[in-house]
Image (tube, rainbow, N blue to C red; front, side):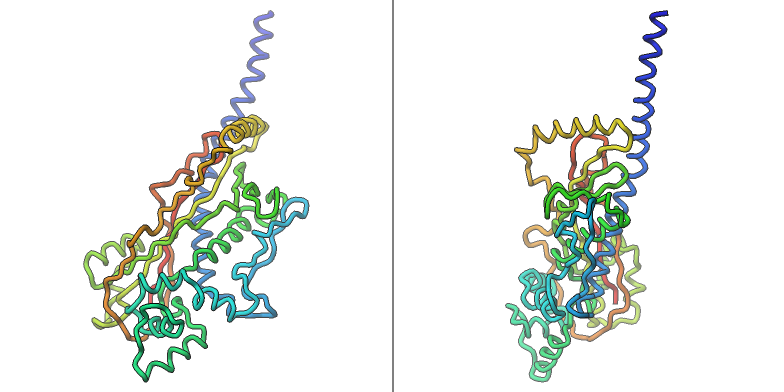
Length: 356
């Protein structure tokens, strides 16, 4: 009788715990891939949003921004204020992104110089180092392009401002994760790295989101090796795209941008057993946090002189006809496995390109 009582008492403890563990395992197996896909899709959409150049539709100082996302208890985090361009006018936003941007100047010099005529003229007007001197008949066009706020995207060059797309990505991702439910956004402090959004038992520390690097590669659609690699990246046939183009048509050249990103992710669970998870993670954090290595935010982006800068000048004007983006998993992924206790850094990449 006594043994039976203890046996049933033991089973009454073990069975619920086992059932909760099964629920948590099923939740991880089902929602970790959803989280991953949502992150990639959201960054892809953020690139598309950047390419829409909403700051040019300047309405009462709004400059293409979004609304403030509000957290639990009405808490507001400045990182989610929807201010992507940090400007009060279209011209100010344009100058920040292009005319006065060291990042764009480096991109032009290392990747795009002497490949697109209109971009060369724009760079000359901006005073970028190495921009070729235009012939007298084109000098006036350089100023016209600047006054009209011409951008690389307008001529089919896939340039992305890293900080701007990061701000867009963070806002879009939190909005997608929480579906406008305030209780799903937990604000510890303004711009705090410990602020997080809840998603199916996961904690996504959105202020740790980083676009860790952007690789740019120019592909020549007439080159056999480039055509093969381009198809691997985009699933598009280069021969079909280049059909009817002359040898000196600048549309033969396509820039593919690979955006690498990372963020800190934790798992607390859905069932009451999540209290054990929380306790274990607190122990883990208290032991490790003081020696946290920020190098965990791995950048697999541009290294050294990996820019491709081997093509000749092409000066035929063309028009933008199609934009596309593709997700690509990173072999450096360290966030697929949410089974381990403690927060992890999730990293992956998205491939973005424009076809004219």
